[in-house]
Length: 221
Image (cartoon, rainbow, N blue to C red; front, side, top):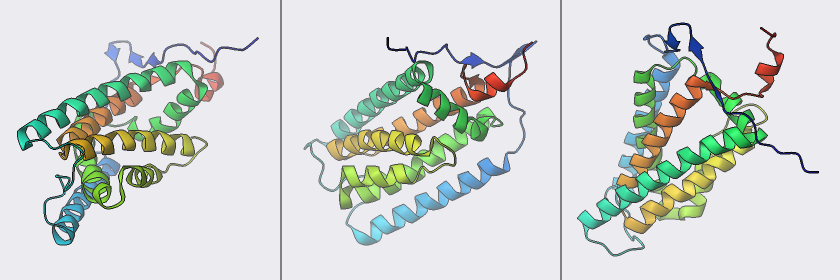
């Protein structure tokens, strides 16, 4: 008989007086990451201006022939839909699958001490830097598939969940690249990426999935 992999819902961390909120202090790692993403944005914009006619936030040969206002509107709509689908899928895999709970556990340390300000800063700047590079610069040059593969490989982490995280990022990269290639506008990918990062970083910070090795090792109360 096949054993179900469905696990209990993630546990929200609480204190006696309510939810656990991060201390409002400067996180050096978050600041360094923000500076790196800002520099990445500047490099991608500069390279795009030098190597091709047109900015990095517009695809030179989109799949659909749309006027700019319609292209921006469709890109934004598709980006919002993609963000909603990915966020919902994240919750499903963390609850139902062991590999999803392990990935959540392995990623939690990077989000555990982030304040709301850190989360918003990282979500915005990581979206800007990665979308300008992987979608704005690389997708027109090498295509949706290869740029998504490079996007996934750039998401390296230590631990047994490394390749699960890479594959997850590749799938998301295909979605983001398809929105950009179809509409020619980077608005949708920017929105989707920023929303996904902000919501999922907050989820990582505030929830510990039940059934993880950390919980099993914890003493009974």
